[in-house]
Image 1 (cartoon, rainbow, N blue to C red):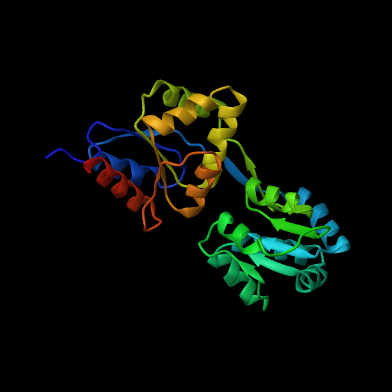
Image 2: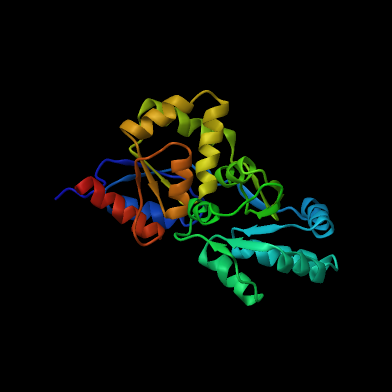
Length: 268
């Protein structure tokens, strides 16, 4: 009996566990193609120092946190700079919102109860939770991790908020040649599916597609003959923010489950 991925050319966009994913694709009869779109995420010590000091000096009406590791990193930096107590004071005096259970858990450890939390682990879910609040003239700090959250920032700006972004981790784009190759493959229809494991990979592809004139062809490819596959909700959300509605995602947010789901999709 033919296996689910028989003859299918499957792009792996991640940089982690690529050997395991390739093996799994091959076991299902597919051809793995490695196009790492992750780039690198680095700790921006110099940049975050001045941003953190400004945040502590200026204060905020809202603090919005999107990752647990981001909270911990900001606290570590504040400790190093001798301003941890001031940093905590600003957060405790502000309204706090959180995306994701790890973020919520990190805040709980600090004794902070958010007034708004997402209902599904996504930025879109967090935005829904913030709908009923008035942001006109409000100073809002948004903590991000390695990438921007354009839809959330736009939502806040449209409601009159003054925004400060704190990104302890910054993102360096992947090699241009790799992204260019994938854009060409998508435009030519020479791959069958692309497996994304983070939102950063999605942004890398679409940012390059916009800059290099590939956007319309990349979108058409995903609408017609190439399947966008996502490891979970946050990555699916990034694809949908880029206008890709046909997204396959496993119930269990794991890389292995994603490949099996893809195999079942083609069998069906």
